[in-house]
Length: 433
Ligand SMILES: *Cc1c(COP(=O)(O)O)cnc(C)c1O
Image (cartoon, rainbow, N blue to C red; front, side, top):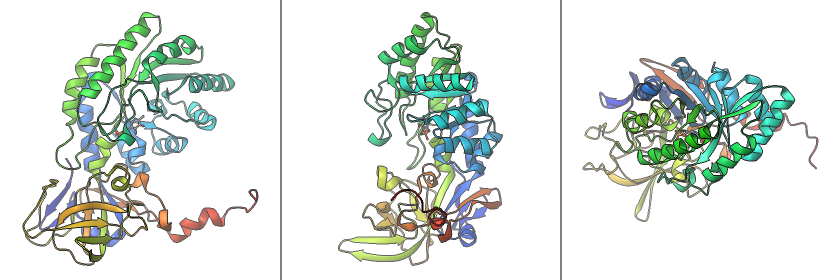
């Protein structure tokens, strides 16, 4: 699933020793494998090839421009959810015609920058947004293509915070309303509502919710076509799982096996919006052990990475496998199983330095004996890791390093204390009170 492996007793990213990267870049730092990004993209492209889909990488999962460029070079388009992400996609050399712009709350400025760039599709999520898009197109004298985001009302069986495809979420419109939206707004001369957009949640570790959602989407498309609307696009969204524990998520080929037959020969331009399934396994977070301490029954491993660097454990109770970069002899393993208990391990909580009791990376984990200064790797941290990092506790965000074969380079430098206060130092002091 990735190119992070133990060789000669220590963790390598492709052919590079992770410890060497930590020495060069300092800790904490994100380390990405270009080959892993490429493999995951290629596997999706191969699995869905019969549909000749447009694969729009979800920028929010891992937005670094160098990562975006790597995927654009493989033929990928982009799924953006803000003006900032649109800026990144274009800066990475993304083809505007292969960009879809999603999101429930696009501002006029954001819509206008999409129109000016000539992006491929706006995924609109409400009647008012479609009406606003039509108004802005008239004012700019531009045309646009829109796909209406529909809630197929299926349960993706994922975390409450990442469930988006049930009837009562803020995303999209339900199927009943979708028909009315097309009736009311479907014949505008500048904005052609030409498709449907489905994104049911993330991660969706089974294929059935996709099958259910796509069947409902297709039934609606048949109805709309029957009513004279030209529907040529179906965007099935993202949400494919990643491998955090073992092999809990279906492979790209398994999703495709269920989805391709449904969509083949339907005369639809199929769009996929994968983020996590491409990025998660392509990155690790490397952190150094600062201190060890015991309190009552618990043993804490206090590291220099915290919830501001990787918030998924605190926010979603997400599981990330954590293991030393250079384990003691006898503890070297590529098995990332959840229940891995090797003789001599001790159950610990791996926590960060942030002043919050929710600041942990891993709880109740069997871990080899550790000492101050040891390096730990937090696996499958490529998606929603750096992209959700913050400066909470005035902690500069970590650098990002991209490995390709035997080489590595910094693709985002570590923030400095000067970076932290720069927007405050350059504020003009006017306005406000
Ligand atoms: C976040 C998001 C995605 C990507 O989801 P992943 O789980 O990372 O694949 C795709 N489409 C939309 C609309 C999103 O909001």
